[in-house]
Structures are given as structure tokens and as C-alpha cells.
Length: 255
Image (tube, rainbow, N blue to C red):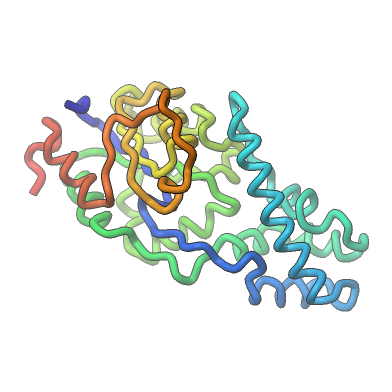
């Protein structure tokens, strides 16, 4: 049986929201960059560099995730290191000055949807007195925050912690520990809910969370097996989380 939760720490993509892949060079973002840099760069080159930059940033994330305490890059570094490093100085400067709103635009997904069962699970946890926090790796956490507000869920969280704002990336345990401090509950009494063994379960274990819950998503299915790192429970969606909560002693009165 899982230990009784006194708080929940939840990932965003794959847990709170479905995060479908977007085109490697979103047309709206390419147009925005083109308007910003003018005729110093062709639209075709912008699209090509954005595509390769996204791939390079993904490789960097995977590499840094294997370190003991992964960190996150500021928005200016993401653009400069992975996208605009070969651009003319004038274009690089224009992107640097708009780095954060551009990162927001690169992060935002118009087809994000709240995952099945999540509203009911979150509201049941809140009714049971379990404080909750978001713990998510994000190029621009402000986009995640705005989505949760639009979905009517942000008021259920005590805090939202995103890697770009904290300068830390999961599986760095400090990101989970900071979230536990924010909800006022020792990490050993928190359930950590994520969709990645390599990032979320590893983060939960390093931080000493009370339980690591793995919610299945396309990312979960695509990860390489890691036999020595197993979650305490596996669930399909928010309905599964609600079932686990109902089975816990603290949440036994959930309706």
C-alpha cells in the first residue's frame, strides 16, 4: 500500500495536460521571427535553424538530465546557443531582446487539453485538504501557467514551479524540494506524479518523496526501460490518480 499523502507534486505535460507535438518550425513563430529580424534572414533559413535548434536543445536536455543536478538555461541562452548562433549580430540582438516572449510562443500549444479525470482528481484532493504544486520542466513556464488558469485549475495549486524560472531541471531533486517547501509539507509525505521514469521517478527518488506515481503518456511509452528505477504505482490518467487517492487513508472520505 502507498504511504498516505499529505500533498501532491504534479508534472504538467503528460499529467495535467496532453502535450501533443507541434511542427519543428511552427509557422506562426517563423513569421514572428521573420518580422523581428527583417531582411537579415530568409524565412527558409529561419525555419531550418529553428528546426535544428529545437533538436539540439532536446539533445542538450537529455544530456544534462543525466547529470547529478541538472540546471535550466535562461531564455536568452536557449536562443543564442541553439538557434541564432550563426545569425548576423543585428538579428541575434533582436531575438535576445525578445527572448522571453519568443520562448512563450515556442512553448504554447493551441491544442493542449486537460487530461481525462484530472479536474475531478485535483478537486477531490483539494477537498481532502491536500495542498498541491506543479513541478515541471518548461522552456517557458508562463505558458503552462496561463493554460492552467484558462482551464480553471490554477486556483487549486499552492504554487507552480517551472524549470526556466527556477534554473533547475528535473531530475534535480531541489526542484521537488522547493515545491514541497512551498506547500509546507515534508517531501517524504508528498506524492510525486509524473509521466517520465528518467525525469519524474528519478526526481522523486532523489528528493526522497513519499511515493513516485507514473502516469502513462506517449513519452512514457517511448522511454528506454530502466529496471533499477521503478515507480510505486502506475496509472493511466486522472481517473487512476483519483482511485489511488480514494484508497489512501487521508483521502478516504473523497467523494
